[in-house]
Length: 221
Image (cartoon, rainbow, N blue to C red; front, side):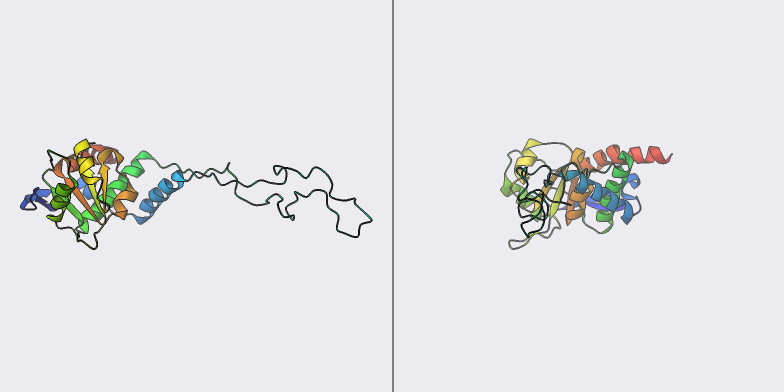
């Protein structure tokens, strides 16, 4: 798959062939759903907790005697049928929501998401991005030169795939509300799929191929 490359001025400088090991992975909706659900489940804290009748304070004394009052018999004011009593089927903090997903499956899902963006024309390649001083104004001007939907009223969600954790790049983009900075080592399915377009320097494509594509190719062999 050939893809157009832009320079920092927004001019087309040529085309490159995207690595087949990453951008040639076939779409599998079930696998992508499994990985995304595991990520969301692993984020759940499971901190919601209700007390049962044995954990609610008070209620050690029988409210009234068993017989002779004309009222229903009760043994504790902390019974679930009493106001302020214990909860029968409420959430408990000992519930575990975590799901285990194999490393190779996660890598394949990431490659699949990237391939889908490239095939939909939502991947914008730039030869490089460098800045002497981290300025949000310069970063915004750079993005507006690329084929992205960025206007004063509304902008699409954009992810910038950074080949490494660069402090200057991070400071340049962090104040743009529509942009998410994704270092290659933190790449994940949810951030890729929820963004409208991806902006990636060529160094990021090489890093993605080394980190994800080659391992998948070795597994197939």
